[in-house]
Each structure stands twice: as C-alpha cells, then as structure tokens.
Length: 350
Picture 1 (cartoon, helix red, strand yellow):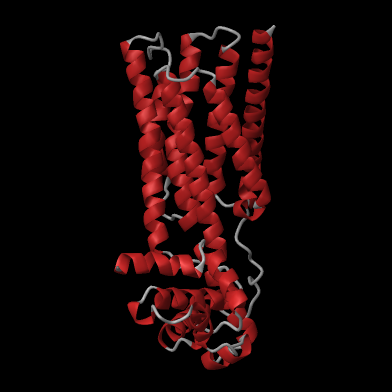
Picture 2: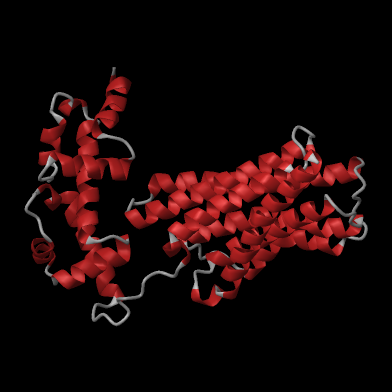
C-alpha cells in the first residue's frame, strides 16, 4: 500500500513538471514571432527537458526499446547550447548568432539522432561513456554561460530593467546546474533515479513562478517611441552628451536638479530627454539620477578620505533630500545597507 501511494506521488509530481515545461515551451514557440528570439532557445530547453523527464516517468512503469531511449537521451545534447544562446541573446542581444554557428553547436544532437539505432544503451562501458560525455557536455556549456554572465555583470551599466534580466539569468543557470548535478548523482547511484523527476518539477515550477511574476522578461522591447521626431542618430548623440555631462560635471549632486533643468543644460526638450534615458538606459529620469547618486555615494563610502564623514552627510552631499530615501535607494540598488557597504571597505583598509 505504501509503495503504491509513493508511485502515485511520483507520477503526480513528475507530471506537474512535465506539463508545465511542455506548456510554456510550446507557448513560447507558438508566439515566437511576437517575442524576442532568445525565447526560441528557452523553448528548446523546456521542451527537451520536458520530453526527457516524460520518458523517465514512462520508463518507470513500462519498458522502452533502447534505441527509442537513445532519442530521448539525445535531447540532453540540446540543453547546453540552448542555455548558452538563450542567456547571451537574452542579456546582450547577441548579434553573432548565425545558422551556421547554430549548426555547429547543435551538431552533437543531430549526430546522435542520426546514429540512434547503433548507439549502445545497455548499461555497459560504451553506453556509460556516452552518458558521461553528455553530462560533461551540459556542464561545460552551463559553466561557460555562467562565466560569461559574471564577466558581463562586471562591465555593464546597471539599471533596473537590466538588473531584473541578470537576476533571472542567474536563477535560470542555477536551476540548470542543480538539474545537472542531480542527473550526475543518479547516474552514480548516489540518489534514486526518480530524484531527477522531483528536482526537475521543483525547478520548472520555480522558473514558472518567477516568469509569471515578471512577464516583461519574455516580451519585446517597448517601441512606444517609434513615431518620435527624435532621430536615432540624434538620440545617440544626445545620450553621449548626457553621459559626458553626468560623469564630468556631476549635476546630480544638486538636490534641486529636475528633468527640466537637466534638459536645459543639454539644450533638448524635457520630453526628448526622458525618451533618451528610457530608450538607452531602460529606466525613467528619477531612476537614472538616483543610480548616479548611489554610485557617487559608494565612491565616498569606500574612500579612506571620507571614513569619518557621517553616512547622512554623504547622502546629502550626493544630492538626496532625506536619509530615508537614500537608505531605500542604496539597499535596492546595492543589495545591502550603506553602513554594511562601508564596513566592508573599512575592514579591507585595516
């Protein structure tokens, strides 16, 4: 009786993950033309893993021919390249993705599909070697993606929209790493085979919850300025002027700075300045100015010259009108309080 209940629980939890994975993967595939092309790789990732776990569930109850199992095994060879291309295109809109390049990266999958009748799947040496290589294939791609994302994060200009995308990418990679570790552990008989099903379901549900709470992550960029009188070339030029002004003259240190005052300094209309900031930085004027003020505060907090200056004084020096608004902004953008940030640098200095 206990064994029967456990089997029913396995089937229920596994089915939830498979259904959600196949549903969202198919949905992204069907609506591909109206969404960023990065979603195509996410769709491939979800469908491949969904089918693979579906096979694991089915195989737990009914025998499957080894040659058919090879086809489902081949699906794992699409996971690594899909993670790599999805994250790069999702974060940086990678323009180097070409059909020829895709063919090279997905070639192992194509090769195994072509050779599925002769690939051994009998639990002996060569079969184990092939599965080991597939695990390494997924691990290498996922690790390379994580390294690329960490390097990208070091050099990008932070804004709210990009921060959300990077957080999602890190979460997505983390879930994938956990799945790969689970596949490896079950392969080494450290954990039961069906543990893959549980971990997969938990991972897919977690990704789905995050995705449903942040639907804009899967939508195309806002084109509300498509009919604007401001040309692309002019917008780029004004953005360059704005960046130079902010970095050299630091007008954001003035607590009375407004969109109208800043637009006068750049000789553009407030409407066009708002459009430029929104288009290039994916944030509004207030968020843009706050980010510069926080970066300046971080500079002062980490400098030995200002170690005796009160945090409240630094907040006012950087253009904030109140310590509460400074504390809120600092925590939101930096992920820690100003005092915690200063303490880190004081410890390093000592």
